[in-house]
Image (cartoon, rainbow over all chains, first blue to last red; front, side):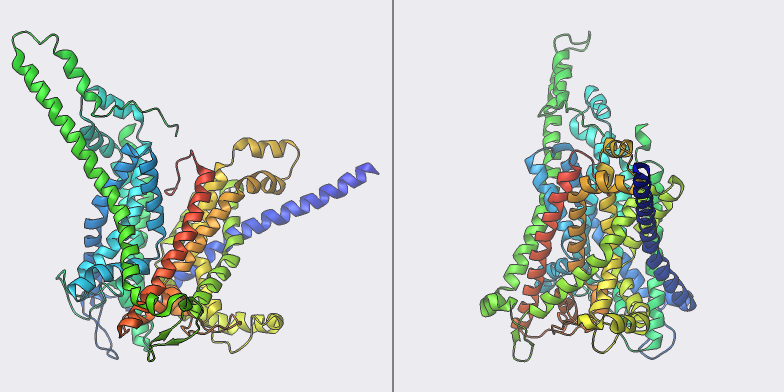
Length: 288
Length: 349
């Protein structure tokens, strides 16, 4: 009798175990489905219009065939460049502060604020940049868009920089300090250099994060049908152009939107894969 | 990584060795070297201090950014706050012509779409995290986690594009008739089937927050001590019982944090939602009906808004959104911190 009860329980337990593990595996499988669906659709719909003209020409007026997004691609690159000028130095500086001087309450306050800034919805940052730059300048501009994206880059870069700096062994700092090298030289030439691969990946990560942002550009960079290379003028950006075309009621516009999406997603995916590659090659190449 | 004790003293420890040298200057060089070294030390102390100041200024820039966000939002929405007061939060009116605004439909839409996203995303992402950390063979772990990470890298405007042209027609043709037939009695799945609407927004948001919840859950689950698992297994637990008793129970606070963090992301998500939710400022019980969220109101109407009250009302919407996400994220950060404290956070892995 007792043995049968034990048996019955163990069969039930085995079944539950199998079912639960099966569901967990199924969940993991299901999560990958949307990725393939989205990437598949973007490639399938985008590849037909992807040609030299798309990459080198201005958008055609609505209803005309052909045309491209050259101005939006260049605009996006300029916005990202401007954002990096703001976000990278501030982010690395804050990361250095957190790692080297921030093991205290003040550091925790900064760390917490970083997390808060990281969680602020991108559209809210866009509104702030609007109020800050557009309202003062009295018109939409590339500068305003760069400010919005730059602010978004800071928390990612600083937290990741802090992490990779903390991975640098303490003994390396002590060795440098023991040679009589001033602390700032130690940090700049020894610690930062050792962690440079990790810091570059953090920049790529932040870059990939803001490259596809649309919401913060809507009221800052605003979009433009023509070329603009001036920092104080509205400029086109790839995500904005995709959005504009996607909500237009024309097939031609939709096809252009898909192709734009393909270009944008390629830029981002290449960045992320490069990031993964560099990261897997070891952050700490210099420290071995 | 074990944290080693820091051996640093203020002003730079490099000030010691040169001072020690002064007792025995090298033959044939004289006191000028000593003086020069003293000068060097002074310079390097100065350099150290200015370096620290520069780093501090960068850190303060973070505080300043958040401060500026608060300041600008409050000052720009001043007009709306003083005109509508608290009623802004409870009114259903959205009338730009009469300049009368209420945020209730947008608040409702934001909450419902985000909660729907959580309902769909939490089981899937926690399952994925458990699979990746506990069950999955090493050989496919890297590949699978890369796929989940790539999902996070897709820009929200592309989710929106896909939502309009693939997801919404799919929902309209297959999912909504099914739900309407079998679950119509709940009242949640009734009315015309547009495809576009609250349901589509929930599904898109669910896909978008999956990777965030999954990666943080992974982080917290990894933090559960190995002994806990071994103890359960040694008592004869099956794999699932081990996961339930030792892993999930120990990590539940952190998983809750991950879920709340996902909620924070869903609340503030703008583009994809704007493109698929239908943008109608009404409260409807049915999930098939179009809705509106705080972020999508702003995204849709800000560029065309005329009149100071209208602009200010939109700014107040952004302020509400900021306040809500701030509370949600702070809560989540505290929960995750309390679990993974003492471990380096692994946003990179």
